[in-house]
Length: 624
Image (cartoon, rainbow, N blue to C red):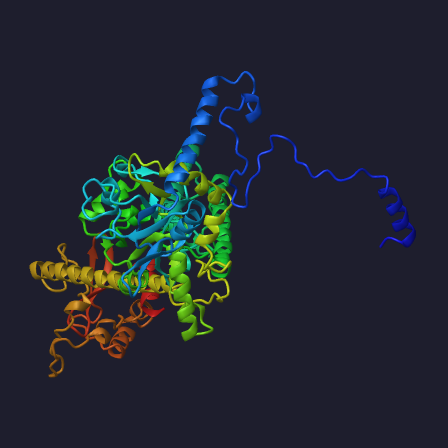
């Protein structure tokens, strides 16, 4: 704050100041509060006095004079004039209301702009709508907005009309673009992210395919390299592993299990170590990505672009006679690739302009994708959010059952439209440009919305908990494993049955208990159901004879050691053996080897080898 001495000094200095000059510089153009020129510039003014150089051609000056004169004449013409303005029911950008006296009143951003122009140019207007709430096209011109403009039934179309190529031959679009319209897809919020869930989420589909191919290929590759190495080097220390062992090693390493294979050769060790390193890196990435997915995963939608709708043949709905329908039906538009979906009844164009009804009927009940321009989608989701929050205050999943895609379905510039030959665009378009550049139109479009995003894709406040869907792949793996083992078990039973039938046919040709070369063989367990009569007792078909058939012969020492005949006879009694004729049995040479032939309790011939090594193996088999 200035002191008293400073104020006194300033007052003394001001006494010597010259008086204030209130006159304005010459040739200064004044503007009123609406931005209009107040100062009248004479038409015969020289070029240097309107801001042009002396070298400016006279044609340019003449154009400026004519333009200014034309604007004056147009302002005078429109002053107090009554205009007919057509519009569409396209809430919140343009919509109408019929009062009790039958007068139709326009609302929305479009008519806020019209009211601004009305105040500036002092005209009156009446609102009319086409018989059908459609934009119109070359093949759909009847009862449309384009027809009214083409027939000059109205002076201007006050709506955010997309600039389509086919309609340019019927109307004149404004030179000022009001905004760039974006049509967005809204759908039912899926329960889980489209990026994947559960065990398959960390890797893409093609990564899993390559992992599966490597799992099948590495085992045979290791087996072939070991075979080639042994043949080239002649090394006999490194025995080649079988293909089954190599395949099992590959699978066991993938599951981080050990292996009984212990290669000696350095090249084989390098092969094994290479696969181990690959599996270590792969499992590390998988574990890290799986953890990140279950904790920090970003929610994505299954349908984000036009290609998603096309490739997945998803049903979608949009407004009848709107930009989406005509962009699909017009050959030189970007959405023409969806034309076959109309033919296959995947696309629905509703006559109802009530967005809430379309959202509940098509999206919530039938699972369609609803395509609508962004301002209408935002207003619709916001009102639905307010209603659902009044029902359930805390649960965000109840508040936001719908999700909106981020990628626009279609982008088109939107403007007002005039009849061809109308000069109103020269009068209105500069004022519209001022509104666009100042951001007023953008502000009016989002005035009823909050600054925060309504129902974003990722509801960040909800905690991520594991569901059955995350573990579903684990269940599938278990079911697949059990089903595979059941199939293999059934196959084993089938092959055993086939082998038994083949063996039964062989015995039918050569006699039971005999092989084609006359040797005594043991019957298959599939044919042991028929027991023989023994000691007057009968045996039922299907009863087990395992206890009788496994009865071993007398020990080898009891036949050939001291007192062999008596000991063999006693052992034979102990083991239920009955010797026929000669108690020492019959000694025969079969296939160049010596055997003692005797009969067991079933009456079948049994061979006991005489040589010491063979007898030792025989004794070990039956006693150990």
